[in-house]
Image 1 (cartoon, one colour):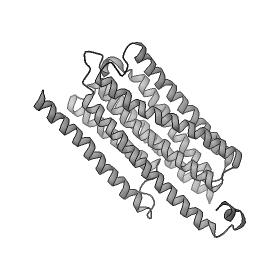
Image 2: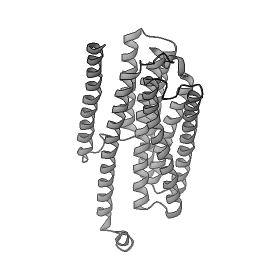
Image 3: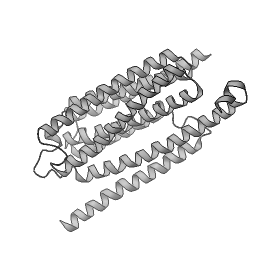
Image 4: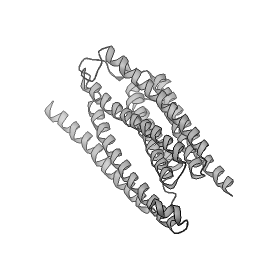
Length: 203
Length: 102
């Protein structure tokens, strides 16, 4: 396949587009299944969020400005990721890497804030073993954090590949899949922020 | 030509970002300033979250833009159906159990 691209510039364009369309569709299928996974975690959280077993409730634990900071950081990273994909479409290697580097550092910042929050909870004794509410909280938000972590690892590998191989059909496709993943993580976070943090503190 | 295409799509992301920021700050202000009474607050927050999710789907994920990958939309609708069944089903059943067993 790669040999074809190198020696026959015209016909593989269709094959490339075909592979691109199929790959993006396949990845979209994966994203849909990931949504179902998060749905089950959300359903669990919604059933258990009042079961505090004498321990602290959402209102006692959550710091809203802190969560807002996390939200804005992740939203901005989703935006910079999108700009990066536009640069990738236009084969601008340096700009793509630049924008994805910004996305990466915003993602690290988000993860650092989240890990800090989790560590504080655990050190105060409010780990996932404290109550059903906290178990479901750590499962839901922790699963999202795990997705962010693997997304950041993927991002690092991805822009290393772009750096070394340039924006070929293969690397561009991977960048598109990554951006799809990253946007999806922000959509999930919207619901986490609303249902866990906002409604937790409001109720 | 390609500069115009680039501008068009960058503006999509900017619009998406601005909409998301506005919706996020609205939701945040509603909660911190307690602008609405209880059942309405929850409805407003869910409404804002859904609107923001749709805005991000439109502007960041470019859903419903391509005519041909119709399958994306079908798959998304199927996912929503499963999501609603799992979510509403779980909440309904657990509420029922809670009432009957406690």
